[in-house]
Length: 141
Image (cartoon, rainbow, N blue to C red; front, side):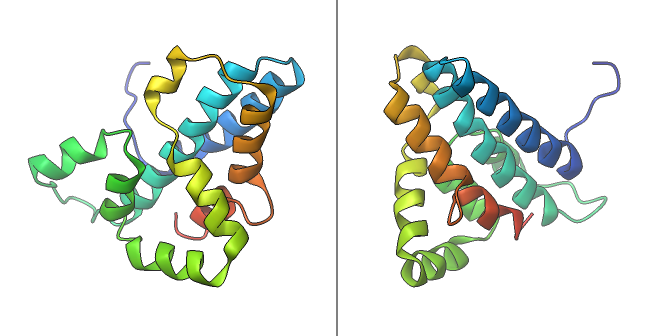
């Protein structure tokens, strides 16, 4: 894409687009792809939260930039400065805590595995359900 650059709005759009794609994959019984893509919904959402905290015209230090390009949700939570909010929400909402626990175990190497319908649907619900990770992240992006 000519002239493309990553920004908060683009990351939010990616998360919303990936959510629609996961729904289509689940409907088509493509469970491994749905599972894998579900993690990118959280990753894009977390990166949108991080981007919200970057001041305009600020040049972040190199370690910050390197950490931003990770797939590690825990590093992204730190960069987004959401550790306390995450812990508080896990303590006050047991269903969210369960959903976070399930979601945080996703990683980019999941593309090398075959995932079941149960796993794919479970991750999708953990992300997008009433007490899901995505609705919580949207409050912070």
